[in-house]
Length: 209
Image (cartoon, rainbow, N blue to C red; front, top):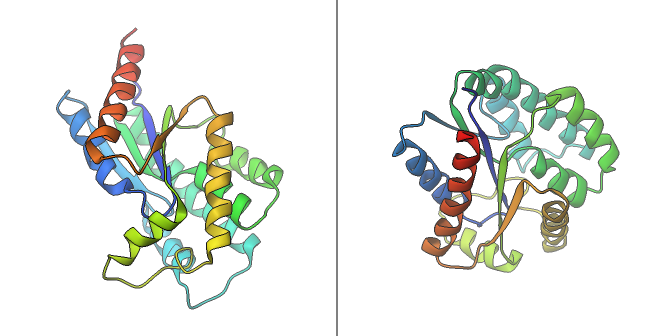
């Protein structure tokens, strides 16, 4: 049986890591093999590209940023995601192509048609079976991030207007994509995970048919 592909999306501070762990535990308890991965990254090459992409000290052009994102994704898809799915593993990914439409499209202003071309070249027909979008006001996300003892990366260092554009792009995409479930990231963790569990249960039922 082919595995399922689930991605988590959201602005900085949305709590993706916590919810990825919940989804993994949910599936493991039901005897599924699970792989947690991330973008950009997931492979040796992808992690090297991630270091460059997130380095706030070295400016790069928006087009360069876009191409590097898809270069990392090409490695990720071919070397990690597709093989895992074919082996029956459920793949949980911290961000995927929806993030590119939000950050490089909405945030940087790159034409979505150019993103679509690269998406087709890189992924073919591969798309998440289910995507959870953790939405919350940008200001709340920023307050949450300030509580972390670490330096800010390239995207975290960008201004409020950029982050607002990213959020709006995410929301617009979630309205257009039936596979995306938008969740209120300001709700208690237990409430959010209850909704996730219900949706994941539906996917499991559909997979069993």
